[in-house]
Image (tube, rainbow, N blue to C red; front, side):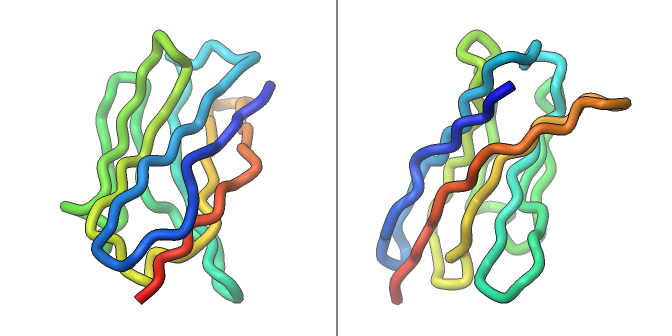
Amino acid sequence: VQLQASGGGLVQAGGSLRLSCAASGITFSRYFMVWYRQAPEKQRELVATISSGGTTNYKDSVKGRFTVSRDNAKNTVYLQMNSLTPDDTAVYYCNAKLPPGGDYWGQGTQVTVSS
């Protein structure tokens, strides 16, 4: 099983980035997908989720700015991030969940937002 996250980088405040997470080795369409992030010296926090059926949920501070989506044909989940602020600076991780035993993580992609 592999989750390959990509799309991070350095962007100015107000800019946008689109993260991707490509999965292999799992039946992707069945999995509940989660984007987390972890800023330096802070705990990892949930950013957005998308169910196998496409239902989405977001951390309050990213609502209206971030959009999570999935393409089951490409085994990929996306996180479109707009109006970025320095507080969004973190390593972003994708996570695939399918209880009772499916819980897989990507390697993380760094997002840095300069003021």
